[in-house]
Length: 381
Image (cartoon, rainbow, N blue to C red):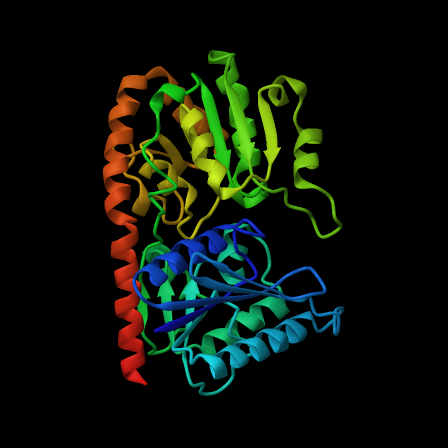
């Protein structure tokens, strides 16, 4: 089969969970004997084409027309043109996009159109208690109408998205994300730094970083040597204001002196950062699944995750990891303090979490599930 992923994210030029998923899955599909293309928009005026371990990646030139009110139209037109060009040269069987990515693919096409639910605009609008923007919401509705089938990365995202967007009678499959266990290998526990917390992810409100800093104040009282390392790109408000800068203005030095914002780092560097953590902390307000928690678990590191969304699909509290209410800083601090006070117990919890993650997010098994579903879809055409 020839599978084409449509995404502006890819780890070589832009970090993000979707890009990481596409790279890991794409390479695995190539290893299994399939062809994989990735098409996305870049920020330069020229097109870039390169091969990433068998995955053909097309980073298209940034379209300069219809920028103010028609950016979605210009991007869609450029992406569609490239995909059809690839299809003429090497017929495509499956195209896959996140929630809104099929808005410009009306009507029947020579390939199967799949939406993978990573968590779209409707999904996160409710969890962040904000309104659905008409334009973005409409693109998702059109995209869902244009799709031939759907994949959900967790049971939660499947049921939650169904409240807002209809899949009709089209095929829907739950297939978990997979972890690159060659990159996220067994941690060397000799490198663990006592009372070190590590957070990885975009520094923004929905990742729970503000609540984590609020919780840190109470942890400092019991463990004055605690330090939080934050790895991830900064997020900006619509007016361009930095979210990290806002955090630094909000919190006093007695907390900030225990925090280091490292900014964005390469995906290949993340395992080394997890190794240093006594506890990996990811108190996201909402996730569809999230990769950071299971990646750390696969390495055998103790993990604190959220009890919201798919949290309880990922971790059994006090058995395979720790769960917290991400909206309650006191609960976050309570779990961190527990981990620091019970290091031997956390070793056993981390081992159980590792066994669960290695089985649930196994790369070869998840790749096989994707291939089986794609084959079934092709037979239905």
